[in-house]
Length: 448
Ligand code: SUG
Image (cartoon, rainbow, N blue to C red):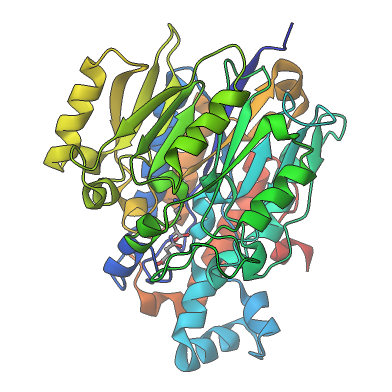
């Protein structure tokens, strides 16, 4: 008998420096909203409201804490000198883009935090975690150390959990975590098929590759993760993302496909070799048939899928069977997508309900509901073995809402990033947060 297991979703709590710096070439929303004034308080409250709604529906909802930003240590390592305030002032004067990079609250998009393989799939029957090196973007490449510390602190018991360091941080091993990783299965506790989608084979110069925008995930990285996690050939499928989709602004697979259980919901331009990809999954999936829900270009043009973030939705099991799609509000603002969703629910397939979530502050940086969460499948024993202080309860929701309201600004412009008060406020807030979540010292400033 396989163990029964649940899927927990760990959302990234939006940090106090959430801002629009236009740092992600290839991510259309990030570039479009460059230098807009952000509202960190609203962003964090939108994220918490999403978590609370899902927790109220009975889903196990966890939290991953924001990182320390601006990260002065990174600026110091790049040669900026003086007190923290002097470092911020010099960086703002000489290199504002660098200051923006070390100030990004990008750790909120926890779909990129790590790749996680459930114990039913791995060679030693432990849950395996590899933080993503995020080497394609400087502002994200500085996340993995603290992400690794948070994950180790939450999943500390090495009888159940195995942690790997991030892959070598260079483009040939570019790894963007679970944003390019989907698990299909008959039920969560049974062995599944882990679909690794990559943008480019880095060591093969003649292989197909996008021409305009970078491929952030490489085949070499995906294969390394599968090896580290001890996945046999039966448990892993590798598929190349369509380079044309990357060039149109689909910078991760989770902007064009989402899977859950036996269902894979995807746009016809998602995969370079659609038939082969589906056949590979079908050949490995046990005790169930793959439900491939293909959205044609004629029904939802790729541009509308990108603008609405239709596929950056959470696909969640409903208690009575069937699934629900948790979509961003933008999906109801674009006619083709909204009409498609109505047809989808009426079609009698696995997706029986659609629910709308407002995460607009995050969406303006290219992060929808699915970007904001990291999925961790856990058996009851694993759930009992993890640190429970990060699981959202009514009480924790109230505490975190009060914490956000007490510490976060409601306006942040690029000029504000140099304000030494912002650094103080953020450290103060995070110090209190690590106490609330019971995580111990995970931040550099707590270790100095
Ligand atoms: O890495 N945006 C993030 C969005 C990540 C979305 N994640 C997934 N699809 N899983 C990124 O491009 C923009 C930051 C700025 O421009 O200020 C940014 O980092």
